[in-house]
Length: 420
Image (spheres, rainbow, N blue to C red):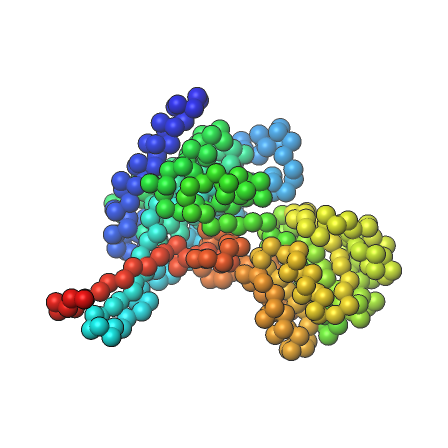
């Protein structure tokens, strides 16, 4: 497809989304919930065909030599489809995020002010690998009264095309929502993204989900506001007041359960007084699980490990590799994490409440954990049903983005003829 044809198709897609926005923005919640229920039913009824489409993507990904973590994120099975259906069910059961009264008061001038939640408008979501993102993002946009334009990666083209077709069908089938409130871009040429990012008259917000390269490209090329999810370099700090058994259990979960996701830890920071007891046990467990430890010079005094480089402190490994840094005290740990973290998720393992509160107060991140795995940074785990992304920004939305984060607000002002 040449550039002219790409632009024509993108123009048609953004026009369809914008022109049909009012039909979902002003719909009642029962209509939106019915659309979601229909989509969930269609997923169940068509799971075999979906798995077949996904198989095509997996075979193509392997032939292209894509890395195992990306193929793992790409793969669907019956369990992941059941998870998508469950996620939709949770979203249906959540309260309507629209027309919530956020504030109301009588002003000194006599005007009565009310502030209510409203949809953002047309949201463009650009993402890689995971086909379940198609369902999660569309479901959240539908429930929150937003139109959405979905642009998945070429590695998941067959899966995403099929899923978006089911979603559009579900909108039109029983609820009467216009199917054009959900749009899918199946053009694999990056020119399509570049041109889409210029359409600020039609799209209100861009949310990227993917690798650092994709997000940087979007930020550098977009005329549309972007909520970013940069890489997740997450840490666990093992304090000198840590319960070592808890620390081992949490580090294993946070690194090994699913190493290819953004809320998995990439670095373990250890107080020097905890290192002698903690590191040999961690090394034994990680060896059994196939985890490579890249340690600082002081780490090598306690265990055999690969020597860490400066680059390792700023690396999102997304595999069974973890960096380990020994520090002299809590202040050094906080300074190191704030320097090398990406404001995503950070954890402290400590039985000392004062140390925990200091960590919570001074670490700059969206999600902070005490004696808990960073793997809980997830919209579903936060009872949001799903997430449209995990924002590492500070403005408008931070951390897992659910229904409320997909709304903005407007002021309604009334009086009986007052003038200024």
